[in-house]
Image (cartoon, rainbow, N blue to C red; front, side):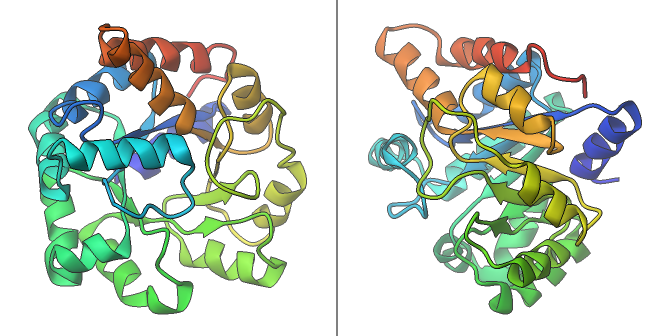
Length: 267
């Protein structure tokens, strides 16, 4: 069974919930990805989204966009990030998802080149945030054939019928955007109860919520309704701050992961 499917299946049996940090590949140093993945696993992450650095990231706020720009400037490439995942895959039991722009997918060979490369590196799933639903059937089929999950994003402003179509087209999990706007830390707690309940009428897939989730309190509030919480900008910010202080960025990621996991139902 795919590691993502297996993680959600175990959690459902135990009535648990998953923690899904997001990291920017190749940040804060070009060779940091593998060490950060290992640290997040040690800190209690269940699945990690690895953002493939892109010069024009979709819907990302200044923290993640800045990290991607700095990773590219330091020499990180999609190939180098994928290779770093491959280097540590045997030491990991967690699921790993690539968050990648369709532009990079095309650059790395499209359906015939990119999907096999992810599989060979040990990725378990893929999210292509700027791929329209109607243009994604070939990519979804290729991912399914290769054993990868393929998750679509659903925004708070997505009409109900459209949200149902996106949920039914997804595999592994559905990515529910918790707030309108771009990624970034927020102080308030997002109210996702109604949207999660609506999606559950359209799909049996687990629902993971992200965007603006940055504290243990917010994580607990979200997973009271959803199956997983995704923490991105706050994680990237912690990693960056540790590097700026001359501390171990991977250690900071592990510690923050432990903080976010505290009080959550076990996976």
